Length: 264
Image (tube, rainbow, N blue to C red):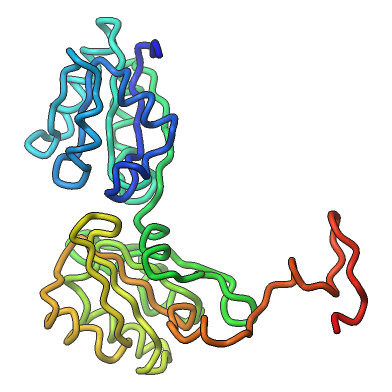
């Protein structure tokens, strides 16, 4: 595959090297320069770069250094794979890269990837949108060193009582619990934490809103973890034949199938 001389911002997926998209894999195997988030992207995946490609880790570089490298490569007629973990649209810090690339006149393309939130749901065997229970998922993070807008404070978001997925928040578990409880959540509301989803050392912790901080401390989980909270995370849901969708209900008519009427 011959790539155009531009920057491809590639979502590598959550960890498992097989979870990169087919397009992302083709770009990685064809790029002249591979710049990747080495603390988060699988080294096994990066080894698929083509022979002779320049492969560099981004953890020791600041933004300007990264953009200068990518700009110089493209301006010399080379293709660049800027490889991010998960999906680059979620906490990927890509807007600042795109802004500087645009100022430099460098073209770029975003290639989506599997987000850690969906990898975590898969690891848990969970559906995050359950009919008659919750039909909304909020993707957010707790306020830490980087503030969040006042209207997006976790307590206000939690008032919707839907499924909440928290990125970058394992070290703020006490604050998270307090905000959920202040929003009126039951202390027994299920919470599931997945550390390093899809990696060989993946770790799963099931707890409740009330016990989240203590259980995370006991498990030694402080980073690289996704927190999923809400009644959709109740592991007992699969033991009950309830909360069926309308799509496959035999009484439900839609564009591809005529319903049977009563459903009995």
